[in-house]
Image (tube, rainbow, N blue to C red; front, side, top):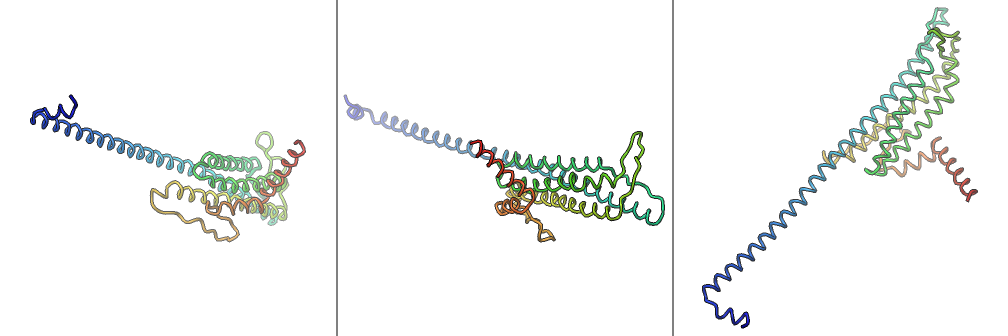
Length: 283
């Protein structure tokens, strides 16, 4: 007997019961499916919320790391600048005493002290560069700050260990065995002014470093925290219009300028030409 024939022979009550049961099963099926879909949707939303929360934590941690290394670099730059300013006051104090025929006290600043301060600045700056390289996933344009700080390191190292080195060795006292000072001949006013002019160039580059540090923290705040607070910080506005403000928006323009217009950029270009020339010969 076919299903249709069998169905016609069933009692009306049984048919009603079967239809009711089938309806219940169908309703249960769709209800269960809806619950599964809802659970999956809630699970997806929950996972997205967890991911978003973790991203926010990572962003905050990244900014804190950047803030620490930038602050350390700025502090090192300020400490080195202060040491050079104190040295200039001491040297001029000696010169004034000699001109007045008075007894002078030799400067307390020493070359090894200045060199150590400079190396502290160098180390701090390299840490900022490393952080930029390690966190470039945030935005590859951040590498413009590596370029900017590389120009500072190039300029300051040249001033410190080439231009200033010989002058400072002659102008500053040298400690001998037992804490005594070796025979000291104070520099002339002309020599002091030469050191002053070279020091000002060094201090100007150190000022660039602290300015670029400020630019970096502004850009990182906009990148990492801007969505949390719903606002963007404006870039730095220097009083000297010749000074560069490093922003991600002008990354390509700034990269071109640093490479074409700075001693570091010219050295980089020449080095790349030499390497390409050697590779071409070897090839």
